[in-house]
Image 1 (cartoon, each protein chain N blue to C red):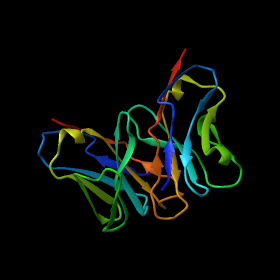
Image 2: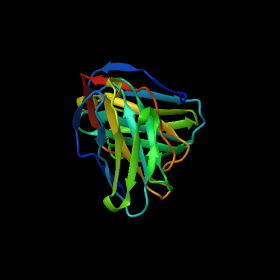
Image 3: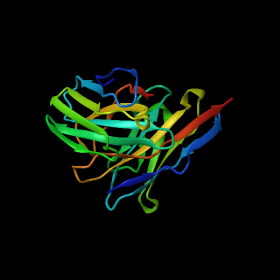
Image 4: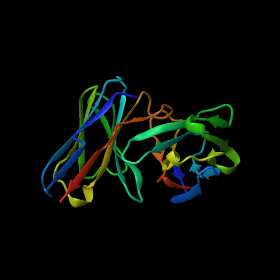
Length: 113
Length: 114
């Protein structure tokens, strides 16, 4: 299995509070991704990174920011959490953006009350 | 930009029966195609992928998929489903452009009954 960890695995927070989710890889892959998974919507890309300090927006980036200061870490921040951001968040990594397999982390379940 | 459609939200099959999950894509050139499986409470795991060459691709767990350019399809098949195959299945398409991420379908949930 690819070495991808996500922390925390579960989090409950209140509306308006900031939340940071962490993705850590040990594979030295160039690309890292953040997705959210919701019933009826499948996986939707939030942001992705193609190198240290290089990031781009995905389909549902509003309300989220990311940072990648080291190859192995990709942080997702909800600046002011809302109930609509209650979801399961997955991190993924890949060596290339298009033709290479993405490897997924175990997910973080976030509940915003 | 590429897109992918999985027409079936939920499918139920009997254990031992055959299975076909549909995936249709939209892309102007030959795409990269993937099938992933997600067991309950888990992340996604690659089942198989198609880049070029033989249009019938073999994957793990007895699954196979066939790329049909004329139908813009990449359907997933299994000749004999086991109870442990109950999961959510995602089709994904990658563009041959080198700079855009994969696009995932919304998934098909498979239930297996005795």
